[in-house]
Length: 147
Image (cartoon, rainbow, N blue to C red; front, top):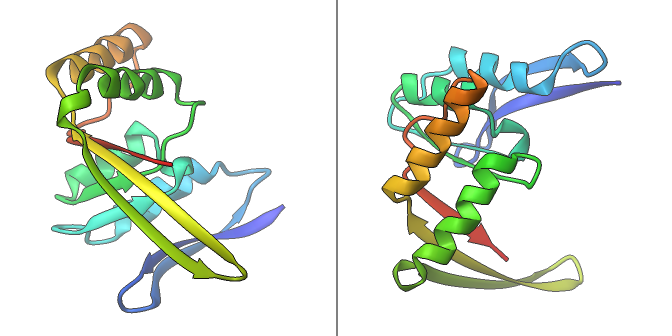
């Protein structure tokens, strides 16, 4: 199956870079890292869905002096469990925001819960990746849950 992975500038409404991909031969994760590596992300916020939630990709953003906001799913077990535990430990420090909109024949309400990571969060992740001998996520500053 073939497809295209795009780096998109939402304010400008243009694609900054794109790569045609044969998903049978190439992993989407490697394409994310490649696209991020060729873009100037300094002082930018790079957003990706959960497919971009991999240390190599996100650390490439950090190396380019950018920040990131990325989706997280349960298949990223270590970081997902730590994020859930973080919310349990810090109930008093959670920032909350809610949006509602109508479109395409439906009404959507989203609730955002956000908080800064604590030392336990980063410590637990670093130890997990050391044991697995994998590259750790760098500079995780906050975690946001959207319902």
